Length: 111
View 1 (cartoon, one colour):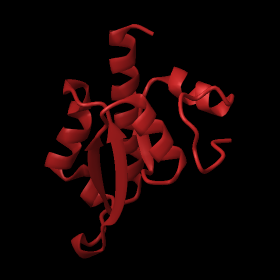
View 2: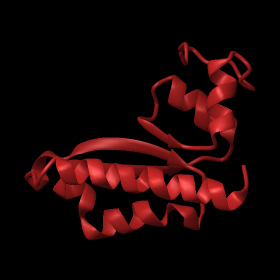
View 3: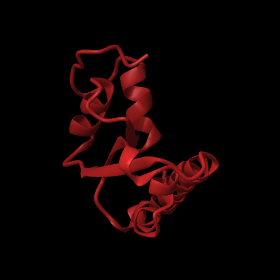
């Protein structure tokens, strides 16, 4: 997968999150549900940053907490083991772990 197609997929995923949040309607600020998202650091996260800045997530009742991952092993094993709610990653990582071909063992079954 090329870098531009990966960035496009990332932007589409972020916009899908924004759209889903906006469908939830406006909620009170005091009851924001935390959502943990692990990402590779970089400018392709701009849709998430903009949504955070503009209050799009908060208006839907969630607070998105971003964590930069050092590598795909850390990202996928912690996602599978329940440390994060969402991961922004390349599909090859997801397929590898679902097929039992992941680079590191996980405590939970990813399927």
